[in-house]
Length: 366
Ligand SMILES: C[S@@+](CC[C@H](N)C(=O)[O-])C[C@H]1O[C@@H](n2cnc3c(N)ncnc32)[C@H](O)[C@@H]1O
Image 1 (spheres, rainbow, N blue to C red):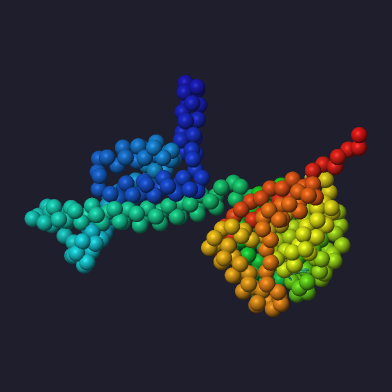
Image 2: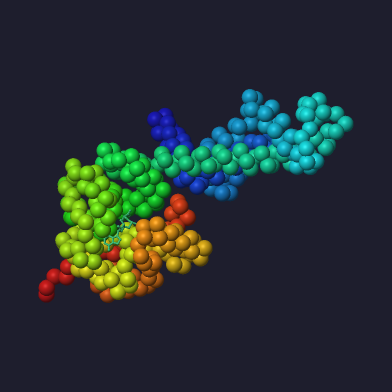
């Protein structure tokens, strides 16, 4: 008996948790709601199970979503479907009467009902799918970890001026790079952030292992941002200074970040800086930098245009210069690094490549 109970529990757990990533959970809810709204009474459960099997979706979720068709909501769904159907077919609404569904216009009304239910199913299913994707995304355990780290970073900026605090808050939410960084192995040892701005990326790396005393070293040309960073990171082991990345004396480091800074430099200085960073890394240390993805068509153009706008607002006096991905890769590989790239499109529609260059273990002398 205990064996049967255990087996039952295993099967139930497997059923409820199968394929629950945001995309598939959203698809299950969309199809469940759609099937629940379209008037195929008697076949809804069958259709839901069949689609779950065909598209390999979570079965309990798709079945539960068909229950949008329940005694409380059904009148609303029927009336809305019929009205949408009338509107689509005749260009105007028609006062709905249930009695008409059995009268002389029955065929006409049933057609409107069916047509309207398809549109309503897509609309309500779409809303349900969107909400599901957001909820599953926020609830997933990896995101819980990342959320905790982002919360710690926000806490560090709690005493900053409102404009800086809100800037950091929005930046952490809109820029996917922080989620990506938090999910990476960020090594150990000193963190150096070149062109660190207000220093939130360093703060994020510090929380990576709950290691509050990881040494953080940052520099930026902008004195105001450095002042914000100095205050926000004061409880951490951080040293930030107003300095030019080109002349900054690099300490030996476990992690070097260059986020959205290279494009301020001429090509030869970008490559020279990358080379210097590679030499400053400890064995197994990482250099992580971000550059525009120049091969994503319209997204690349938008990204470049947004940077040009930023440069002119900052009166940088130059235009952003982005080298091609192979050029960046070559300089890293020539310096003996193991290189990985992650192409990604940001929440703002900007196309980027994240370069992750890892220094191998030092070769031991024979
Ligand atoms: C787009 S912001 C990026 C800031 C930060 N890395 C981030 O990810 O939010 C570019 C930063 O690079 C700094 N910067 C540009 N050229 C620099 C240079 N030659 N040396 C130091 N900082 C520089 C700017 O002052 C600015 O704060």
